[in-house]
Image (tube, rainbow, N blue to C red; front, top):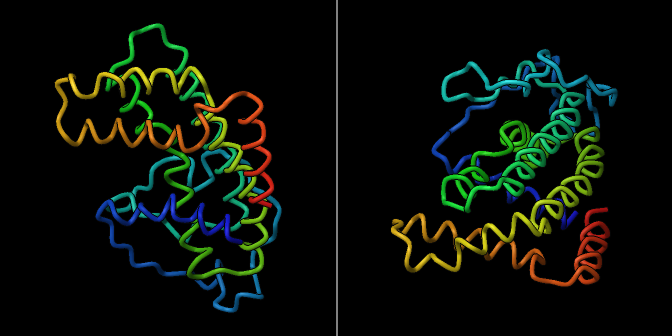
Length: 212
């Protein structure tokens, strides 16, 4: 549970972007009693019928909670992780010299599906949970832990970030841009990017253990 709480904080920054959401839960979607989940645990495929498949058409792209069911979450998380890893691999394997735009900004803009599904899921599981959501948290936590490791322990990706970090003082960047590069570098290092292969394997094992 402690690890799940840590994962939640990653996505709670969603509201810090200036969105104030008024959440209305339809009677046929969620119940106030935590021990009485309405939805089954059978997953719905990730296609255009999944509310996280595309950006919401509501004002400010606010989630359409009336259409969200528990079984929408896992397919959206899995597709979101697949999408973001593919984007990260494309960034890491490009032949162009690292720049703010083709590395840091590209990473910032990655994971669109995860950015849609994770804030909704973690806010619901924090403020309006039920047995089904709690069970899903336990399934998702190790997947997200592994996903994070796959990004931060990608040596080619870290190499590009490190190149930018080394030139940060001389680059013609704003203070905000310079700080963003520093934060990315610090996040990679703290996640184990500078460790040996054996040490990184140990980090992965620890993160998996903490998430289960």
